[in-house]
Structures are given as C-alpha cells and as structure tokens.
Length: 318
Ligand code: CP
Image (tube, rainbow, N blue to C red):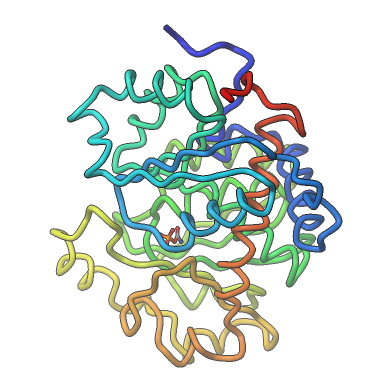
C-alpha cells in the first residue's frame, strides 16, 4: 500500500521550501539555546535507525536528540535487517511503521530510501545516501549561519562533488548565500542537483559558481569546506581518486588565500593528510567540532517538525 499523502518525509533538502529551511534553522538555534525542546515534546515516541553503513555523528546525534526530547531510539545494523535481502524494503517499511513513529535510513542507494518512504506510513529521514546527506547539510548551513551569518557569505567547497556537496549546495541556494565549488574535471556535482540549485538561485539571490581552480574558489572566502575524496562504497576507486584530487588538498597554503578570519569546515570523518592536513583540521580556524555538535541540535528541530509538535502520529501501543 502506498504511503498516506499526509506523511511528510525528509529525504532531500529539496523537500524543504526556503521558508521551511530558515524556520528549521531558527528552531535548531532555539534547541541549542535551550529555549525549545525542554518539555519532552517526543515523549513516548520511538525512532528506528536502520543503517547499511557505519556512522558515529549521525547515529549518536539521533540517539541523544531522541533521549533529550523524551523519546527512544533503536539502532538496527545491516546484519539484523538485511534491507532488500533478508526482507523486502516494502515489508521492512510496513512493519517499522507499526512499531515506531519515525525512521532514519542510511543506505548505499538513494533509491532504497525513496522506495522505503513510498511504503512507510511514518516520516522517513535520509541519514545519508549515495546522492545526498540532508542532515549534514542542515548542520553545515546552521554552522555557517552561526559563525558568519548568511548575507554575502562566501563558502568555498574544495574536493569531490559528492552527497555532502549536493545537500550543502541546496542549503546555500535556499538561503541566498554564495557557494564556490572547486572540483577536478569529472568529479563535479550531479547535474540534477545543479538544476535544483539554479532554480532556487533566482528566487533567493544565491550564487553557485563552478571552477576547477581551488585557489580561485578560496580567494576571499569566509568559509573553506572539504570532504573525503573517496566516500563509503567507492573504496575500489581509491587510487584513481587520490591521483585525480592532487592539488585539491585543504592545507595552510590554500587557506591563506581565504579571508583572514575564515573558518574551515569538514563533516568528518576526515582522511587526515589527504583532503585536509592535521595542521588545518586541528588549527584555530577549524569549526569541525561545532559542526558535529550542531547536527544534534538540527536533528532535534527536524524530528519535532516531522511529528508536527507534541502529538503522537500513531496511537500508543501500551
Ligand atoms: N558526517 C557524518 O555523517 O558522520 P557519520 O558518518 O559519523 O555519521
């Protein structure tokens, strides 16, 4: 049976209007300040985290967020669920919808999350897929806004046009800031995400600029962002990617082209000595630990938004 139309999912940043994104950022800020979320708004609610890939930050952030909002979280590893192998994606979605109020999925294929969402009757959150990482995008844009504001802020992304960049790009486009993307030829963001970003650019006044020159991207930037060159699931491409990304390392020499008060971001885990040096990752400009913490505050905002406040979307089981 197809999902009921009233259920809202968070599979991509494209699921949010610009207004909703700003409202989520405001709610995340209130969560962080402790002026929201203290009255156990998710009391009695349960979250299932069904992950095909490893996670530290995302999983732990959801665990802590649910606990602090008065709810409960269960983690299900690939060995336990066997999504699409032991059991069909549709059956897992139908069963999970009877037992929990929300589901987070971390998958290899983005299509798995879309299929799950079609059969789920509770909100589904994308906890990372090969195409997008919207929870990370929220943490990133929150951190940029917190540290630099968004008006006229230039973020330079140097590295692979991956899932993290796709979500960051949509967040920047929807909030009217500027993103300069420096990638080697053949490793840029996917056209479908560029098309989505370009469509919003006109509405918000954002600017998304593409180059293959890391120095051009970073010069005068307020934020320098990088991510791994080889993502989970691409391990067989490691040597080819290492060669392709030579010259794209975020090191002290590259960061020296940014504004004197520029910050450095990385969603982590980092491959130290590859896309970023220890000196920069551990240096005074680095805000990577803020980024990691901010994911938890933004996930609280997402969880409350998806369940629509304080009411449970399903009758209590007990
Ligand atoms: N950045 C990120 O998603 O971290 P984890 O893989 O540890 O969740």
